[in-house]
Image 1 (cartoon, one colour):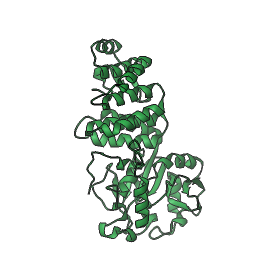
Image 2 (tube, one colour):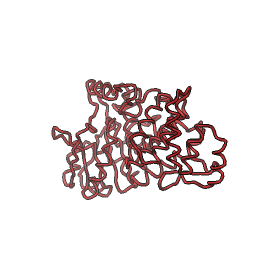
Image 3 (cartoon, helix red, strand yellow):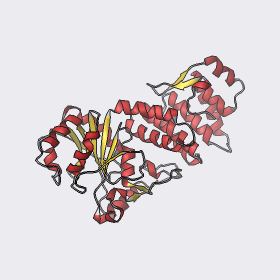
Image 4 (cartoon, one colour):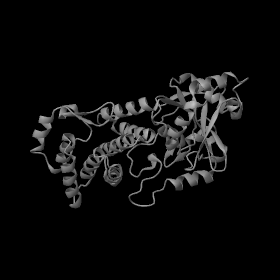
Length: 366
């Protein structure tokens, strides 16, 4: 069953809109005549016959299917093309527990990524699409997911520096070499942050080189352990985009806040999240790249410099963080709270952290 668009099948994924573009209507219409019930749904979607497709999908969903996954995902695609975002997402979430192979998981994530793209949620779209690419890599061509991910990154227009060199003594990070390697839901904290920043064109992780999700560029501050300002200075030469996210490696829930930070940083030097207590998290921030270069150049030293010194002369937009996107993981209690936060509360609810989704057929790197 074809769910990712294929030019050889008479359609392709439009590079700009990420919606199907019909290339050979006659061929698709001819295939419709002898297609099975599920394949008909996709052909009807490609032909733009959405009302008929939705009616047939509704009928199939009412029937007891021995394998409901294909129907759920095809029906979700029809609802997406019809502009019915809520129903599309509901069906894909129902499909996820039934996606019992890497390829099915990848296709489900691909469709979720496209739905997020339609909703303007670029960071969430990128995270889903990146996982789809990761699942497909080495098994099936990831062409359409990679095409979609490139489009999302083009629109987002930023790079990211993830600081992952701190030891985190209170969490036992010294034993692992860095706090960001402590695991949440089986994955290092830094990988949660890298995935959250999937919409970044380039991700630079400052810290020990390792096998990591998303293939970041690794650099080290000089000397190692010289603090976050030195780490930012080490990563900045790799940045090319006009905006750069500066993120601590222990912010697993930061993804949904990145769009607000980018928007707030458009007319100032930097934007940072502020929690309800009034605490500004200078490592949950987005900077204009040239402003960050100037701020670093104005410091007497970067080794062991306080973060406040970096922001001393910068115009800063403080973005309210009502959803605890800037919640970091500093203590065992913080780790327990993060674990509880991503625990699903019902069979159809998926965890807040994408890497914690049940049954995700990825192998956690060491």
